[in-house]
Length: 389
Image (cartoon, rainbow, N blue to C red; front, side):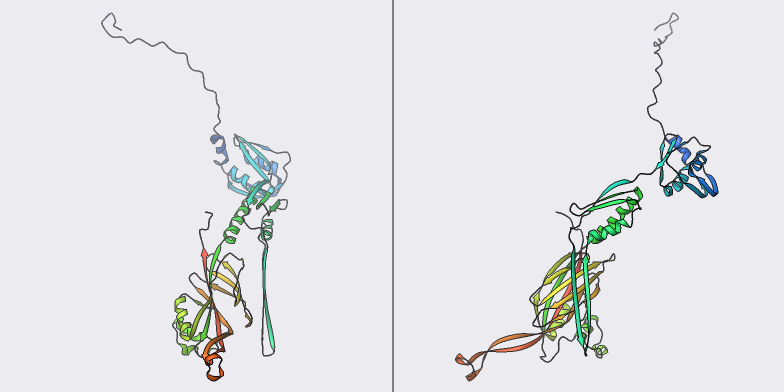
């Protein structure tokens, strides 16, 4: 706008009425709650003091108000040095079965109530058991070794969970649904969760066991079997002479990493033939069974955290030659456990020209008894990354 003196004057906008103050819709709990952590105090009680009186002392001089539940009771004896209100509450309340809740500047103290939580149990609802008995006799005396393996995952879980719960806790295992229902305080439920995770990690470890059953027919018909001292010496690179005085074991338990070299050393002592090549897949601490025409074999693996597999092996040679053993051996990754000492007699039929004593044209069948040694090779491998596809 142009004024009378020629100057330019700005027109003033009409004034608007002042806006009303906005209502407070949300409280900022950070400022009131600061009294939980911004001051420390020291309290000493040589005689029991009611917990109600102690709670009033804790919030004295702060902006906090404490509201204890009428049902709470208990006493406190001890010393609190340079602790905040929050630290004091966390130290005093849990042992008395109490908890606290902050609502603005109000601290409510009440008896803790148990919670109910469901846990998945991904296990087969079956009980498995196996038993073996080995008897050996020599020099008029005998010895018997018996071993029994019983697997009841849900029974073991029941004992383990019960030991982690408070006296008034309740729980129930539904085998068919694979569910565990536990009612207890939150910290106890957290312990159960940690325990179940650890059990599942160990129980669901899988082991693949590549087995090979072979027979060795010695080149020397008078030899009792394979000379394992020679095999062991050449496998580990030691001199045979140093082991010459050691008697031949009936059960080798040799661990090797080069199976091809082992088979070549056995072939140098006789004819090697393969009887069976089964492959077993089993869970941790679960027995796996395999049976052939010549041998029955029970193997139970146990996988350690370092990856070493402990094998409980019970081979039984079937008639007409009988033999059995029971052993426990530790096998590292890439190693093969060699079991031997099982000898039997095998019939060999061969057509030969018998001259005038034979049948038509002087030919006949000659039956000979040949002594062979059975060797069992076990190679465990831990199966990782098992999932549902």
